[in-house]
Image (cartoon, rainbow, N blue to C red; front, side, top):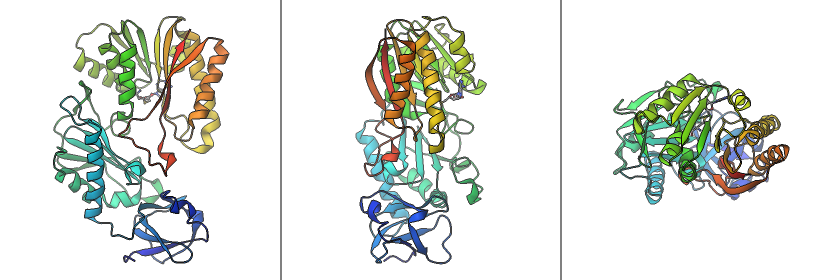
Length: 395
Ligand code: SAH
């Protein structure tokens, strides 16, 4: 076995790992070597001493995130291999084109790099560590990223102040590890947008809605579109390109609205079909006349950030969707999403069903949506699936 400290599992607790689920919960640990620190690479062994895998140790309900089920060293060569595989997949997906340079390169467990997220915006990679182990590996990762042929990465911005466990006291500073500011404009399916990785939410843009925005473009022609929770305005500029007759973007954050306005201006300068509003989504929906919009997008922030909040989240989804069903025009199309990992597809659909029933309208499901292929789900780690959406036809 490679010379790492060892975490030994309780009898029988290797079962899920033998099925390649990459997490060791703290309750599964029988004992561990002295002196293991957060972020260390450790060997995980079964109660009979059989080697199970090698992973990053951390304090909390997940004790180890498995990096590999083989007995191997976790070094630059390991990160190089995993990041190259991730890059090959994105090339296969056709995401690197003259008219598209924004995509997720690493989606944690979905790319066999638990605790790591990397989004690419043209020449800049934005790296987020969700585990102390990935925090310590950040320099190696940054160098592998800029050395990858064909990826075109020149700048690596590290942004983990809000994603690392607070108790670990790692004091991560958001900053460039390599390079610096070159441009903040990236391109998605030919549409340009500014990405504010310095102050924006997540890595600065929601790349996970790319495919769903393209869907919206298909349905936008001639419609009056309301984009609720617009953030940087992604759905709005696809609607404009799709020929919407008007597009109204709503967000409670003034910063989000200024990003939306700037992005609309970048693609459709002076286009009078677009207007934006700083408002609470519930208040806005309450106040509008029924029938004013015939395409509504509801893409709220995660209502349930953890399992304990599911009940209230479902009430929130039901209320929000009920408002949209009350107000959308006849023959209208509703795009409705949940990005709460803790809320299942079935639970979300049930919440939307209850909202529809309350409105007593005829509602049909046209499409069932999910996250795009650059946010792959490791089949052994179903927790990696988080985005769900429905496109509904409302009579
Ligand atoms: N649809 C966006 C992502 C939405 S993120 C995209 O495609 O990029 C969620 C957004 O909801 C954030 O911008 C946040 O400011 C906004 N928000 C949160 N609570 C809100 C509320 N009660 N009313 C309106 N907007 C809200």
